[in-house]
Length: 385
Ligand SMILES: *Cc1c(COP(=O)(O)O)cnc(C)c1O
Image (cartoon, rainbow, N blue to C red; front, side, top):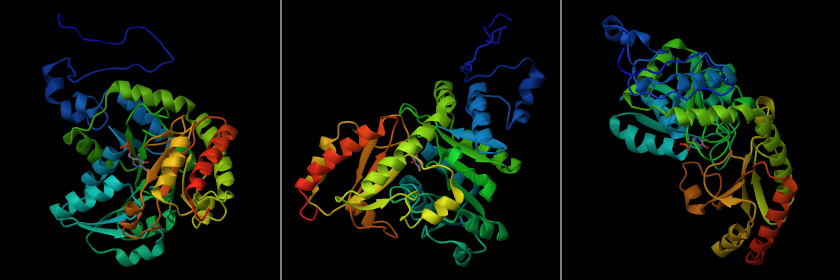
């Protein structure tokens, strides 16, 4: 052959190969004509994936105790791709009010206008979700703990009802990571990870994963992923594959530090309320204890009422927490969610602003001292504290 084709010479490395391709080349005319038969696992064009992408899918599937995985360019893309794969006009879609904001917006602003009947349900619903199910119900979206306000969901109670009625379920399992919860074992059809968070682990890559057991569902999602053009670069796959090498160590360390920091804050006079299921007093504690194996690295809190200037004092005083969205990386982060955002939710958990902290790999004593001095700045502007 006179054209260049990269193949693998005799070479072995502990590092996964980064294999790039838009075009995949074929040995013969017959191979080319039959290329669609290579789906859902094989390679026919870059949009259906590369060996680097497939390796990441296999590793994530193993962690999730799943037979199959499809990756997407972000956690948001994984959520939307799953819904687009299975929901059509005329279907009824149930979405927890505590689900990730972009999923709710997609459901309410796009799907509802494309003829999908979108219904938000209270995250604390259990088997009573049966009362919301109609003949047209296609999919139930769950997330536990819920985005920002951290409500737990009774996952097995909901999946049991869904299975009885032939309704599909998906769970955004990002908070726990597969090390904290293998939710397919609880009857969930699709486990979604924003690999951007714990799996990538270094705040430098966007990635999403959809894991499942059913081969028919896998075929549909592989097609949906490629029809929507949702492929990821092999360099990004490489970064997540590298992140997975240290995932168990990071989860263990961050999970322990997070509980320590949260316990300290729970006793702090400036903290009005913690939103963190691993704490004994949390409304979701019993469900967390029953189902989850780790403490995660993310929690929220409500501070004693104060004017907005108090939050300037708190955030700007932080030395070891960067201010920023996202979470799950090795560096600790602090984020702010204004009161209006909470009050506008379908079932508001609070009408107060929420502070959300992601705990990284720093010394927890250092983080606690940092929070104490920043809370002291907050208290200066807080009359009740
Ligand atoms: C961040 C996040 C997402 C979205 O992931 P991106 O990769 O940032 O698009 C989805 N669900 C949860 C729970 C998240 O925390």
